[in-house]
Each structure stands twice: as C-alpha cells, then as structure tokens.
Image (cartoon, rainbow, N blue to C red; front, side):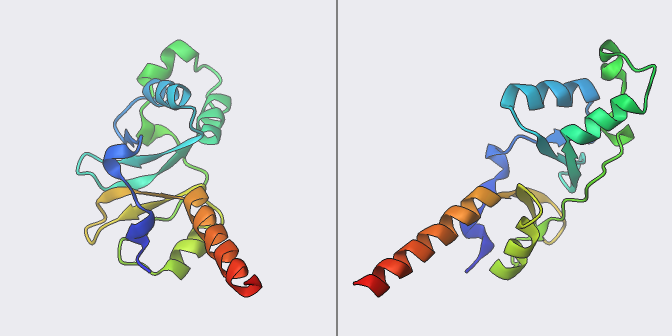
Length: 141
C-alpha cells in the first residue's frame, strides 16, 4: 500500500514558515488548538516540527522574554527538542507505521524534500482498526 492513501495535502495542513515569529506560531497554534505544527522554509522544504514544549522551553530559558516581545523572536531561533522525521511519498507502510509510533503526525516530502503534507497517526490507527475488525468479522462468518 502506498502512503499517499493516508496523505492530508499541504493545502489542508496548518504549518508555519521558519522566518515567522514566535508570536505568530503561538497565535496559530492557539487558534487551531494544535500542540505541534510543521515548519517549512521559503522554498517549501520541510525543516522540522515545532511543539508547544519547544515554545515553553524558549520562554523558560529566556528570562527577560515577555509575551509582547515574542514578535521579535523568529522560529529559526527556537531550539526544537524532538526530531519529527518525515517519510518520503514513496515510502512503504512499514516505514510509515514505525515512524508514526512516536509522532502524532508524520510529515511527507517529495524527492526534493519539499513538504507535501502530513499523515495523521489517528488515520493510520483507524485504518488498522477497520482492517482488523473487518478480518475478524470474516473469521466469525
């Protein structure tokens, strides 16, 4: 099975540019109620994933940083503590599942590392559950 079956395309994904400010990210994450979002560069390449934890650690480790000053801090200045690995669009399902074990979503990139979307762990679990349920129903019949 192709991982593209699970893909939520970039046009439907909330992501942020590496050149955005901390305040922009905070507001976007709050508005959409997300705890992590993909970060892309100006060329559309996947750079990494920024989490609420990364933002909190930045606040904690910047004692003079006030909320009003978060518009002066750029995403590229915020250390990311977790590396969310992307998968290639041509990856197999085994690679996808092993990556999704530790990530709420898996970024998907093309041959040029251009971000093309995400695969949500919940979609993978739902698919596996339906397959398992369907196979159990066959066995019982």
